[in-house]
Length: 160
Length: 109
Image 1 (cartoon, rainbow over the protein chains, first blue to last red):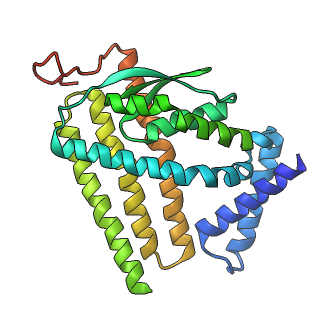
Image 2 (image 1 turned 120 degrees about the vertical axis):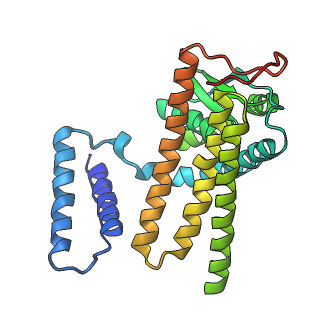
Image 3 (image 1 turned 30 degrees about the vertical axis):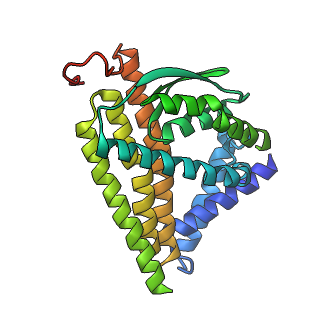
């Protein structure tokens, strides 16, 4: 409990300093400290200071996943852009299912969001062990069926 | 150093703008609702990444760059949520994806 209180306080202080930009103002700075303290106290009273609301333990594992996802987003963007510029009706759109091997809601939502973030595919429904999605062409379905994204998200989930 | 940053920032801003334009063209040229959501996905993802990173390189203070970074993170969370909500609703409503072999005019959905 104390660990998450400390990390929530640190995150709020960092966000406040970055958003206000007034790091030396004699009146604004104490007001910022007061609002951070009030927010932490309110979050405590609400009983929402726990592992789920703590963003810090997500940061380190995500650092390894994000660059890979960024590469996928880049590649998918260029593919869709090329399709738009050459032959926009040369599509083989379909609805498909892909196996998901994540055990937690968080892991599943990371996988589902990653599918949606790469242009060409959109998640429609998430259930335990399976994700139902729309793909703009057959090769994207084959790519997801290979399961590299699923494996990487599961690995990320295990480190969380 | 400043020149290199300027050049990099301009490359990002211009490629972001190009993607925005291509996304807009795709929104018109793609045949049905589902594929148009994908065209909008271009502007949701790489386009905003390019433009906002380009702007971040032009920012003259850390707080300003941080604000742009927060904006980018929010966009990367809300963009997929909106695309998912639209697609799920369309699917729930019984809209079928467009099929090439059926021919005929593209749907107006």
